[in-house]
Image (cartoon, rainbow, N blue to C red; front, side):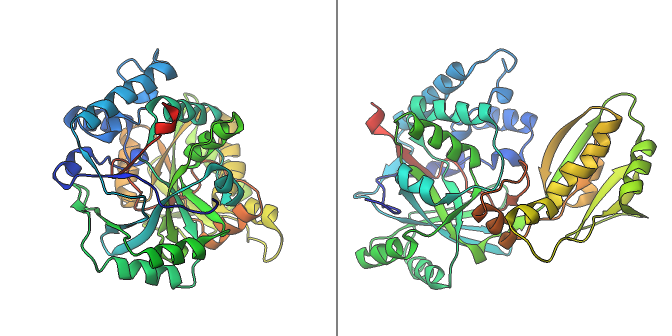
Amino acid sequence: MTGIQPFRGMVVRQCVAHDVVAPAYDALTVAQRRQFRAEHPDSYLHVTRSAEDEPDAATVDNTTLVTRGRAALEDILAADMFAAHGEPALYVYRLIDGAHLQSGIVCEVPAGYYHDVAKPHEATRADRAQLLAEHFTTVKAASSPIACAIRDDGSLERELHVVTKSEPLLDITGDDGLQQTVWRIDDAAATARIIERMHNEPLFIIDGHHRSAANRTLYAQGISLPVLASIFPEQALHLVGFHRLLRLHDGVDHATVLRAIQRRFRVETVSDVATVSSGHVAIVLDGEWHVVNFDERPVAGGAEILLRSLDPVVLEREVLGIVEHYGAFDVSYTPDTQPFAVIAADAAENNQVPIFVPPVAIADMMAVAEGGVIMPAKSTYFTPKVRSGVFLRLFDELD
């Protein structure tokens, strides 16, 4: 069978959901993730571990990490924190964050079909994909759906809207204000229409590139695991900027870097910045705000030409290239989910230079993905994030 499929998954029980459902992983710092895990012993964050979050981060290996993750899952299963809901089904998953609402289908997708229709747009790290491949074969479960966008003429949204009029299986609001609601689709005719509607449609990956790469790695090795996916109509999504935080190494002079950027681009010094639009980035050097105006983007051309003109790509190629010329730096990332002034103040306390980047247009992301070209890592950030610990799909076939 090809195409999206109903799955025999489980949904976290309402009474323990607040303890189990994990926060958005990359919206937290390492210190925040460690603190969250300490304060939430049943969180699914204990299952999806990364080396940097561990007390023995400098020495822990992948085998130890995924073994710890499996032990955490066994504790969750032993405590009966997830409930099964009968025969395989599709689910509607709605997220409400402030005024933004998005609903999508949660399903599974056979690996071979998935890799035919899935369209990535961001680069991945081989080491991270390898860790996740080992996670899948040792933990033998998936709870973090790969989030995808699909083109929609409104028909899919209408199908989802009908389902959300019924009684949900789960309805929770987290400490961060995100409301998550889950419905099981019991109408066989609606299920068939949705499956047919999505057949052979491109699935544009919006979150989960490394999970996707891990599945592809296993598939190439002859291990075919279904992909747990959440698929959203494109018009429902909210895409924000992904900002850079640079820590310049000793001896790198901020004024020299600024002059070099001014020789390449038109730069305006301003009192402060609250937002940035396409074709611009904002940078704070020595406490002063500067808006960097990129060259005009082309009006025609293929995916490769479009890619070279996108703001995160120009930033990586030109601005960070200039900075690197004057000395080494470390970079971290933060999404545009807080006011610029807050991000800049935190960066100053940590001796970092913030660079504020506008969001990539969803249409541009899709064009790049369909053209088979890849943006730098951390070029896009869709919010709100699909969370781990809501759904659970056990890979019994690996037993």
